[in-house]
Image (cartoon, rainbow, N blue to C red; front, side):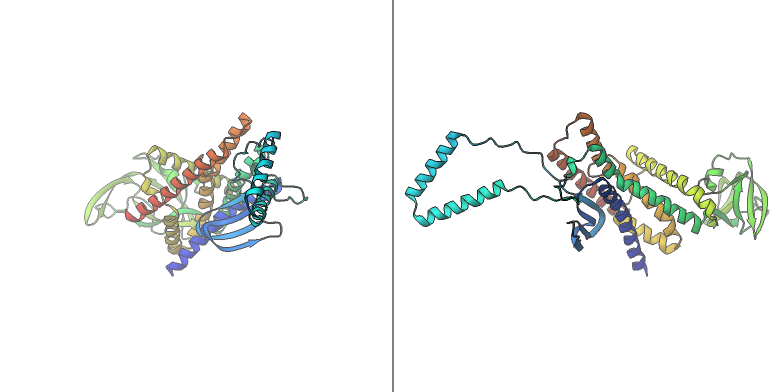
Amino acid sequence: MYLGFILLSIVILLVMVLIHELGHYTAAKVLGFTVEEFSVGFGPKIISRIRRNGERFSLRALPLGGYCAFYGDEMEDEEQPKPAPTLTDTVKQNDETENAQKQDDLLSYVMRSKIEEEKAAKADDPAPVRLDKSGMVAKTFYQHQPWKRIIVLLGGVVFNFLSAIIFALIYIWAVGCPAPQIAEVYTDAQSNPYNALQKGDIVLAVNGQDITVMTTYNELVQNAKEGETLKFKVDRKGKIITVDVQRKKITYEKDGKPAEYVGFGFVSQTTFIKADAAHAFTYCVPYTFKLSWSILGSFGQLITGKVPITSVTGPVGSVKLMADVSKADGRNILILLPLLASNLAMFNLLPFPALDGAQIIFTIIEWIRKKPIKRKIQGMINAIGLMVLLLFVLIVDILSFAL
């Protein structure tokens, strides 16, 4: 059974990668770029098909990402044109040919001539080229204007972000908004409850502010001071009532020993408040922005050391996490989809080599200075960045299992 959730998690990751690469592909086709290969995953091919226009579509063995390869996007720096042969060169070549004729036998001379002809033919023939849909020689990736390349590079991020909005709409509409449901109420030494809440109550609002995907229960009560009384609107067996709840010092029993904390005197579990279509359409966009902002904040905390590296998971750890939460509650799948889509969008925007953000930076620099950074240098930077990135996700995956 658990294997099924693992496979489902892998499929979800592949769908996220597919959406991202489809963004690059769509932008490229609209702007007239020539696509060589559209691949989901890395490594050996599992399935590969070539269309009539020469585009290859592949599914590869390692679901760690994907790519949309364009015609000429790995082209090296242009070579300097070779100087035209001079009269002296021509005379020298003729002398060498005459000497070869005198010194070699006929068979050797014929074979030598054949080899020279093949070399000359290869030197004269142009490199294999692709044609666009109008039959003209296609432009390479770097022959397109920088602004066009930036749009293509941003295509994946835009598609991930748009998909996050769609997934958020589905999640809010189908699942609803998370809210606390009272599972246990603490009592004092005289067995009196610390508040008027009852087991089974669902908190709908705090001080007149409804709980939504944008304003969670924890956000509404986090600034309450000790001794402050809040008004909870609760659903008690289908009846909506208002209950005064004071934040105070609570004494309770933990592992057979007395313990204290400042709070409201209850233990809750998460339930979901049903939302209609209007609510879902109203909040799907701001909710996606909220997710994206929180993800950027997490990246910043990771860089500054406020969040330990052990809290980060790589692809393997992510698959396990998705499988665990999906097994616990099937609704968690819908909760994860907008989070994963936003995460992939924000991650690819980072200006780290081998990611879209770094390629955009390279293109902007080229646009400003009217001259590209050497392609070999870009290739080296991206290759090193990819190795570092793969090493990083390998380390965090090992740490997530070891610690």
